[in-house]
Amino acid sequence: MSETIHHQIVIVGGGTAGITVAAQLTRSWFHRRDVAVIEPSDKHYYQPLWTLVGAGLAKKESTEHTEASVIPRGVSWIRDAVAEFLPDQNTIRTRDGKTVTYDWLIVGAGLQINWDKIPGLKESIGKNGVCSNYSYATVDSTWEAIRNFRGGNAVFTNPSGAVKCGGAPQKIMYLADDRFREAAVRDKTKIIYASPV
Image (cartoon, rainbow, N blue to C red; front, side, top):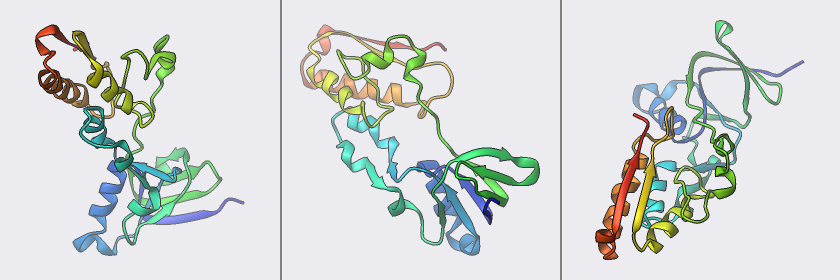
């Protein structure tokens, strides 16, 4: 028989969105609310800073924290992953077999990166100037590419569909442009912003 847990408000996702909402819900008149966050990871990454990491303005290590350290006081952490949503029953089933019921549900689970959906990308990311700010593992390669750029075409892409931060491709392009000027290679550089829209 599976364990059943009830919380007034359940937040799926312990990333920046989920943690921010949990913090807001436990402040002021909300402080008596029973809030739980369902998040399987023991690490929390403050991903909005990754654009600045990619531009050499911050260290990626400053974006990594333990999940326990960012869970707001008074919020229950259910260290598990959601396996099934049953909205008509105000119920979630977890990977580990728990049944979680709720009065209110907030879903902020984030996006999953599927590098292998583009042929060759998984093998190329982080090498030879192919970089991304959307992963802790690859964000340093962005700064390496920008720092070592000596002119030519600098191509920044914005994929179709949902991305973690819609403005990130433009932000890193503007930051790279600034760096190219500082490095005196801007006059030898053609910046290309490729977007399907």
